[in-house]
Amino acid sequence: MSRNHPDTDTVRAALALAVHAPSVHNTQPWQWRVGDTTVHLYVDEERGLHHADPDRRDLLISCGAALHHFRVAARSFGWHTVVHRFPNPDDPRHLAALEFVPVTPTSDVVSMARAIDDRRTDRRKPTSWEVPEPFITAMIAAGVAEGAMVSDIPGGATRIRLVEAFRAASSEHRADRGYRSELARWSGRRADTEGVPARNAVASADPLTREFHASTLTEAVLHDLDDHGALLLVHTGSDDALSRLRAGEAASAVLLSATGFGLATCPLTEPLELPGTRALVREDLLSDSGFPQIIIRAGWASTSAAPVPATPRRPLAEVVRPLE
Image 1 (cartoon, rainbow, N blue to C red):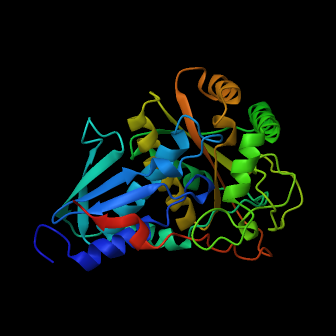
Image 2 (cartoon, rainbow, N blue to C red):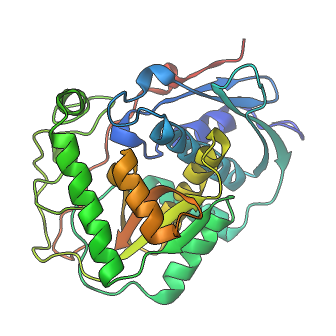
């Protein structure tokens, strides 16, 4: 290790944690390039979802989550990252170039890095145990610090209307043959390196849970989600590529913060993938003054629930290459 750049093993260890980031349908749409003194993040557009994510929103949010995971991991190893987002105007696939500055890691950063290994997407309903207000405040603050806005979605009528938006999006997707075919490709199989295996998708009527193909994970909580479950909306003032990337970083921060508190989490995007239901969410939750990017459910898992297995990940050799 030099004074100005982490050694190869440290960079590789940080990348090994970065690829644990959540991504839409577990597509893992990122490519990393490692130079002598820099690390670069590119989006792998060939892994985009043409039916579920035609405007690439989820694609960029997924890459933003991986970027934040890498930054947290690097900082826990003693390296602050200086991030240049979209450094090459002629190549929109080049999402970030990162340089390094040595720092002393804090206990908070080390705890957040540990949460990377612990975090799972838990699509099962949470219990009705209330999430403490200080936890919600801390999760919001973690997301806001990453350049997006985060709002606690209130209960009552607002929650009911949001659930209806989820139902409407699910119904529209079920009627889309292309979407169903795409979903079958990315779920319901014994995936070795990508996609959502049947063991990680819930076979239930929960309106907030996407209907993946051949789901086998069973619910541990049999009642409906009530107002004690926290739903946090990550939103931005603009809807350009940079805003979506920052929304992914913010979502990662919220998820890792929640995991540190012992909460079960699930990123939710289905009603935001369709123009009609996204407009309804934007109008209802943001009064048309911003752009909803991703919703995060956080709550207490049932004490009787079995742990959620980790979803598969692509080998580092497939996603990390030397910078040419």
